[in-house]
Image 1 (cartoon, helix red, strand yellow):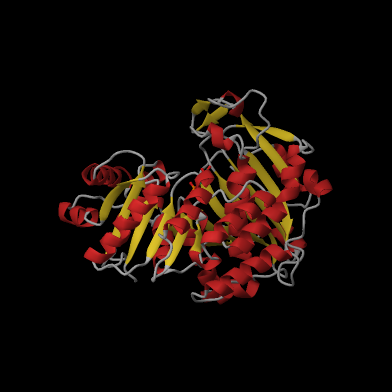
Image 2 (image 1 turned 135 degrees about the vertical axis):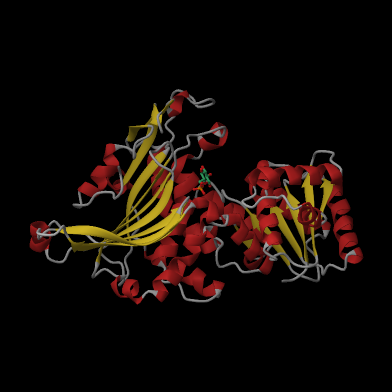
Length: 486
Ligand code: BG6
């Protein structure tokens, strides 16, 4: 891996503390950081290098998947870090940053490769990107990369404007847009599992599949993010990005290997083949919900409008379910049902593929049930197949058996480890490319318009449930039901 300087904007913030330092630490323990490496943390606070390192060490103790108990390893890890005070609006600060970066490159013999990680609010992306360009920070003989977090725009137009701004300072190949769902190990393995299991490959088409269900349910509510979430909702916060990325990864028939260009094309194909949603169909194909009070794992919780910072008349969506169709030879005729919501009964991200029951009469007479292929994505990880098998002795009826594997959440590497590792080595396969982002917004735009005009009912659902009844009706109309809602 190339030596480089990792320039971290927002080094004193929450994401850095919870995700970035622990991920870098685990990569370090796995020997996956470059041998010659330096991290310059940036923030407005007047911290010394020592204060910065003490904060990083605390974050490792609180959030690292592996214990930070080996003092020698921790000290070696901390030796990569320096702190630099920077006000993102102040031109001069970028000049002094440039000096610091160049000095590090000279003294530590680091090749002039620079990764700029923007762990800050999206409103600062443009300012920072243009200062990087103007100051000369981006003018390097080595490579430069820009890593940014979502949200990437609020709608189609703002995403386009935003991209046009960033493109002035960085090329598409240099921009790594994080969608942390793409870093989840099971998502990264979806295609490999299909390719290495001919049993799955053979049945992976519209001849055998009846429907596909993608769920990301959360038990948390709005938490302390009212200001952001009430202007975002489940559609912008989860659906436009994470859920549509899961759809692309599942339906894309991605090629084996590392070619990010091919991955991008396959994912783009999925989005281009999605049947466009017409504004007048939004109300029948999309279910919008908002949680009321209820209880989560036995504990009473308040409704969305009674959460701190949420106005009593909020129409914001905390749940969405939608039916989508992909118009290509593989998937034509198979409905994809996607749902996500807050304050639901369980924390689980999973994909269920329901197979057709070829002979209905036999199924009814013998108590058989559809075969299912289930991918557990997080917090637990697993893949299993549900088959019909012989019932109890003396009885003719069938029963069901599950074949598969399961790992509990603590054994699974964090998404950020995979993503930072890939960004460091320049592999953009598991990042959201502009074409995908633009096509996602394009598909979602009629929903945004219909929500804004209040053309879609806002269904209430009790906290601790699986969402509004209307979400069940969405499938019942087609003769299906959501699996595992109990
Ligand atoms: C984030 C959303 O992108 O994903 C949050 O902003 C959400 O609202 C989170 O809680 C869910 O991620 P995960 O990995 O816990 O499923």
